Length: 80
Image (cartoon, helix red, strand yellow):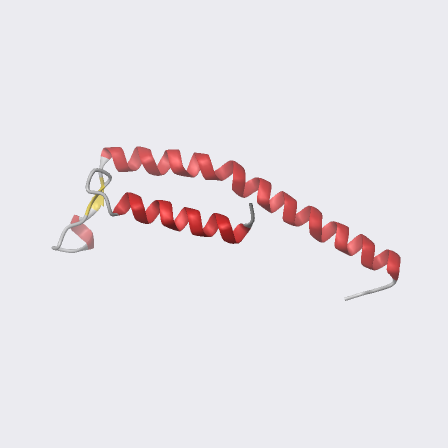
């Protein structure tokens, strides 16, 4: 799993939620009258809690990869 994949599934998941009237009331009167339903609020919290772990793990993997690249570049004399 990488950051790009997480972006796609996060966007897709949120779009699916707000497209379903069970989770989001979209008013033709405008943004001030549109809102998440109670089910929608809970679904967003559940979604974020599900993705949060994976987001942190991907970030840690990227940091570790950058650290490895820095060490390898230092050992091989490549600076950049």
